[in-house]
Image 1 (cartoon, rainbow, N blue to C red):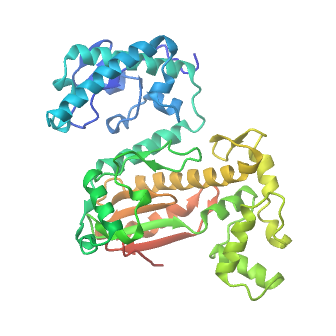
Image 2: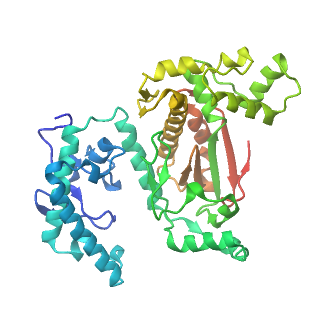
Image 3: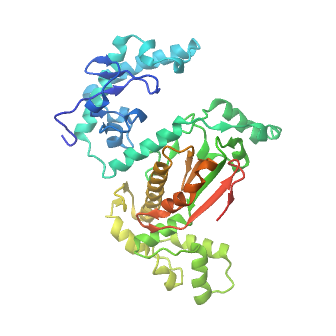
Length: 408
C-alpha cells in the first residue's frame, strides 16, 4: 500500500472541457464538486492546480492506463472501453461535434457510472501499488505548464506558404495543417530522458520545418525565445563540479585549444571536435588533457549509473547499458534543468499579458507583450539561474516565429 491514504476520496474528471464541471465519485455524477475535499484521480486537469490531489498517471509515468490495469479488471475495462469507443464513433458518424457539449450529457448516465467506476478502480490500484516518483512534485508542475500551453490556441496565418503550394513538400504540410489541431498538446512521458513530445493531432511545433515557422504569429507584440548556450556541455561541466564559463562555451574551448593545441582551428571545428569526442567511446581521448579534465566522462558515469540504471541529478531513473549511460545522464539532466527553468519563468508571467507559447526541446518561446518589457531582464536572469549554476542564456526576438533574431 505504497500510496494509500485512509482519508482518500477518489474521483474522475468526466469531460476535460473547462465548462464541464461534473465529476464521477462514489458511483454518482456529482455537480459542482468541492475539490478541496477530494484527494485522488487518474490525471492532471487545470482546474485541480491549487488542490492537494494525487495523480495516478504520474505514478504510472510511461505506462498507459491500459498497461496499469490489474488482471482482475481487464475484462471489465475492455468491455466499457468498447462501449466508450462506440459512442465516440456514433458522434463522428452523425457529424455531432462532441466539443459542443459535455460527455455526461450526451450518453446514458448509467454508462458514465460504469466507465468511470472501472477507471476509478485502476486509479486506486496504481496509487496503492506503484512507488511515488522522486520527482513527483516537478511532474505536477510540468503538467500545469503544458496544460496552460494547450489551453491557448495558436494564431496561424497560412498566407506565407500559399505562395509555395506549387512545391510538393509545402502542399503536404498544408494538408497536415488542415487536419491537425491549432493547439500544442505535449506528452511529458514521450521520451525516457524527459524531453517532451507532442500528442497525435497536436500542432507539430517540435517537428515544424524552419521554412514554415513564419505562419505562427504572436497574439501580443513579439515572440521572445530563451535557450541555454551549449546546454548539454554546461550540464556536464556542472556534474563534474566545474564553475560555468560566463562567455560562449565554444569560445572558451577555443581559448584552451589555441593556447595548447592547433591555433588554426576555427569555432565550428572546435565545436565538432568536442561533440565527436564527448559522444564517442567512453575511453577515447580528445588529446587535450586540459579540456578532458573539465568533462570527466568516466567520473560522471560512475556517479550516476549503477551498472543498470541511470539516476540523474534530479532523481529521474533510466534503464541504460554502459554504452548509452553517458548519453542518458547528459540528455536527461539537460531536459530536467531546462523544464525546471521554464516552469519558474512561466510563474513570473502569471497575471501578465505575456504567456508561454511553447517549449521546443531546450528553448522556451514567450508570446510577449510590450507592456511587460520591464520584466524581460528578470525573466532572462531567472531562466539562467539553474540548480546546477548560472547558465549563459541566448535570447532571440521576432515579429513572427520565422524571423527570430538574436539580441543582447
